[in-house]
Length: 350
Image (tube, rainbow, N blue to C red; front, top):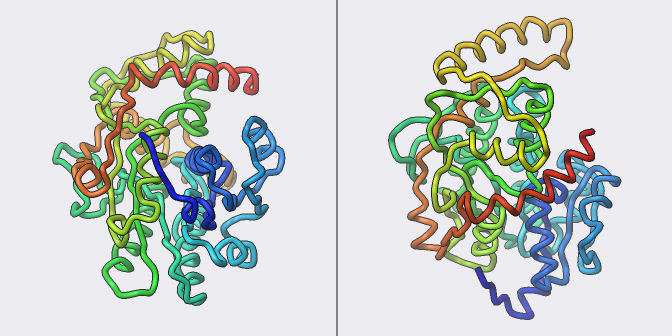
């Protein structure tokens, strides 16, 4: 998709939180390529930042080291920003509950509070997840109720999603946009691809006999959706579901990951229902073990099984009609884009 931002727009300050995460990095890199001159990027790890941006012209990027809990750092990034994009978040199926709420909920609430206190007209864009609409056969739209499917990830995402819906419905001096993408895939993925590679390497991969094709969006299509919201009043105080042109099953995706990484693909096949039951047992066991070993994680969670096997059935008609969103990258078009990244990860994972 082609974008024609004018000189005044490219000169505006854009602040991206989670700038070394999968989505944040892709947005920052695209903004640099499009000639934006005042991009600010919040990151935590210096080595990771240097590695990820090694092939990017960073002359137009101001890096802020810190995290979403540091108010002084956030204020520096928000000050005079035309757009603040919150692409940060905890995106695992297990962990410390307080961390999920600190990062996924309270950080966004704090940003909105800061923008309000500053009296700015800053456009706040927040990346949430289409999983908040739940996993069922009925088609999900932006009017669908929020559903909690696990006690950590979707619970925290549902909490902030509901809070932002309420903020959108009330009067305030700045606009908000909530983008709810389905599973994001492609080069740079820091969750699915590394996790699947480790399972393949360990011979622990489990496939689901009756898994359905799931809703996916390639990272380049998602970045297009983000940019369609920039300086666009049709995005103001709206919620948009973002997905790809087609659904596809995880098994062929995993097979390609194995092929590109030179890893074996053999794995057990179990019904989704059985896998969900096994995950429930693993989670109950993990809760008990966590009393003595807080860092212990279950081998699999119900959320992981749902994400890998069950479609969200999300409609992108609103984004098509109002934003002009037109996703182009399906499995066939996009799979080769992951090859170099997967081979790079293989070297890093050992």
